[in-house]
Length: 205
Image (cartoon, rainbow, N blue to C red; front, side, top):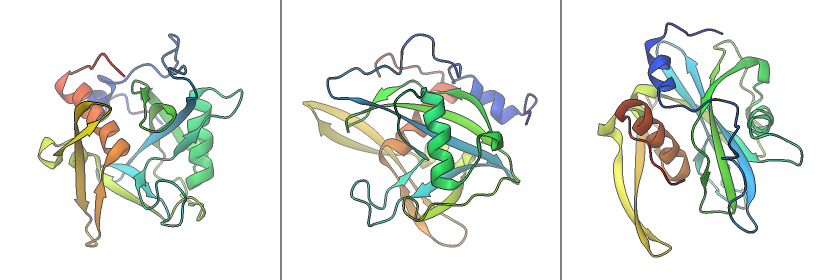
C-alpha cells in the first residue's frame, strides 16, 4: 500500500515519529511498570476512517470502553511486534494487511503501563474478525471528525496533585449510535492532532 501522494496521510506524517525506536523511548520508566503497545488503524473508504473497538462490559478492566487494538508486550517482543500481534488477536487483521507509517511518543498510562502508539494504514479489502472475548464491537469514525477541534470537548481532572486537561470526542454514527470516545484513546488522537495540525510537540511523556 502506497499513499505517498495522499495529502491527509502526508499531514499526519508531519507529526509522527519514525517507526523504529532507537532512543529507548518505550523503555520502562517506573518501578513495576510494563510495556504495552497499541495500533491506531486507518482505512480509506469514501474518506479516511479510524477503526476503533468497544470492549465487552464483562471485561474485568476497562469494561465497555472504546479503544484501539493493543495490549501488553510479551517477553522478547518489540513495541511494534506487540502492536501487530494484539491487533491480529483482537480484530483479525494480519500484519500483511497493515502499513505502519509512524508512531506517537510513548507515555506513562494511569495504569501500570508504558504505552507506545503506532499509526498504520489498513487495506480496505482486509477482513475484520473481532475476538468476542476481547471486543464487543468494531466501528469506524471519520478521521476528519477526530482531527477537528470543534469535536474536542475539554474535561479537567485532578490527578496526582495536578490539574490535567483531557479531551473527549463524543460521536454519533450515521446509524444513530452514540459513542463517547474518551480517556487514553481520545488523548492519543488529540496528541496526533496537536502534532500534525498544530505543530505542538510536548516534551514530557
